[in-house]
Length: 332
Image (cartoon, rainbow, N blue to C red; front, side, top):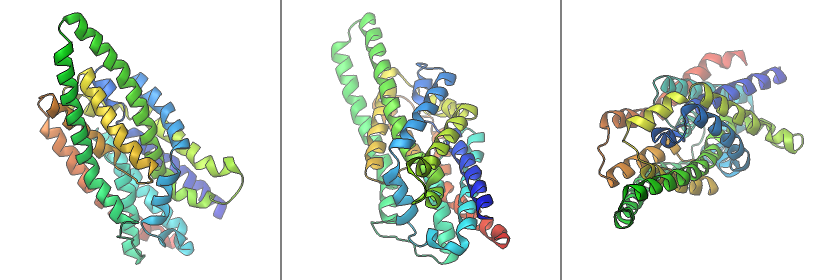
């Protein structure tokens, strides 16, 4: 029975990683400025996701598994229905958003599912700085930081370009330079995002693999997550890339570089300190900061829809998780 359930969890984890990949907007900027085609971007993103998830995920995984609700995953009698309910809730939330081409936070979906089941079953939630207090603080401050950094760097870049670029040829040279820098920033962002996002798919599953087998056995969930994330990005993720890359603000190579650089800095810092951050919120706010910094009009209709889904994601995921748990618990 346990082996069969483990197989089910692996399949569901793969599905969830697919859903997260389908909602990955990391390469939106290079698509927006037409430095890469959508097809090339999703293929490149798939490879980077696998590498980043494998090497940059340990600290974030610990926070998600042990710090938010310390006793939830120790509930052995309910372990399998809890894990399956969390996965199903996240997958449904992410796939629905992706179908409409809207980027939402897989981190919020996971945390919302964990909180929903923890509260429903009476498990302790760590609201202090060592748990949800830290997560909520970062959720609020990281978009502000991303916007501010992006805005200030954009102003500095425009000032430097205004002083140094005097001809069309110099302008083309600058665009080419920023195009190459943009690709470097996208790789950095992609590695950082994968370290954060793949844990959202496999953090609960890692509990079942901890302490057993050898090195590669314990790393198996990360490989599964990387493959699923890459497949989702390739098959469905192009919709989100088009939405964020073209409909939030008009991009130029320099503004796209600033956007990715700001997002990469914030997300990488959070991942290395073990804080599960919403890469979606950081990237969207960085898009906005660069847009304001270059005096470009923002598409507030798209922004409002993204913000609405960001607010609703943990609530919807939590409700689905609780409903799924009570629907399936009788089978275990």
